[in-house]
Length: 247
Image (tube, rainbow, N blue to C red; front, top):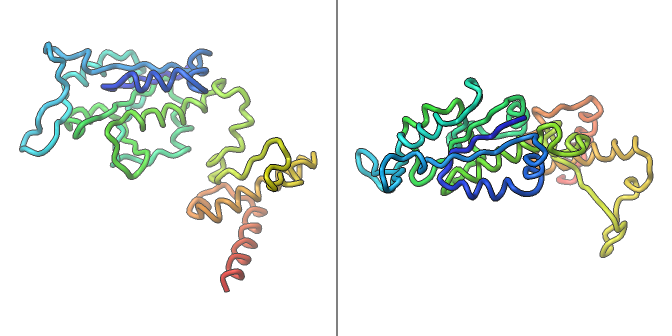
């Protein structure tokens, strides 16, 4: 079982999302848990104050260390388990990191708010992670992104593991197009090869479509993708064709 521990000022945001869909089923089946810890519950003053003005002046409020340390120290977790601080300056969150986190028994995530953390809170983290180059009002959305991306990879959370084998980024490639019934909709037809029943040709078509889509939309991924000699030949043909069309 993988246990997520989320320190957040807005536990309802985490709990609502995690009660439904795939993550909700993973929790109900006992494959993962998601527990929230509100620093306000660990304040010693009657106003449950979690922030204060910054030393040196400046706009906004900064989250105080005392309630966050108290919330963190209340968590029953494996002592060497990762503690993630969601931050724009952190390591980009990618699929390989999501896979590696599935090997843990506990993952703790610190969600910021307002103008950020007192720097001493950051000392609790073993890694800083960024979900993108943008600024949000709080760390709950990045935390949910991590929970979803990691949680769905835990064995048993998604019923058919074969579905994971064809997803975007599994081999470092984007996923190719998918179709379902009806075979013809508004003059848009499902490719005949997908209806042929020839699974060898279907798998080849899907691989080529993944390569083609990655080549067109995210060519930067190809440098680190897991490519066969056949893949490289197909990409070389695509490159020559693309160059010919531009001339």
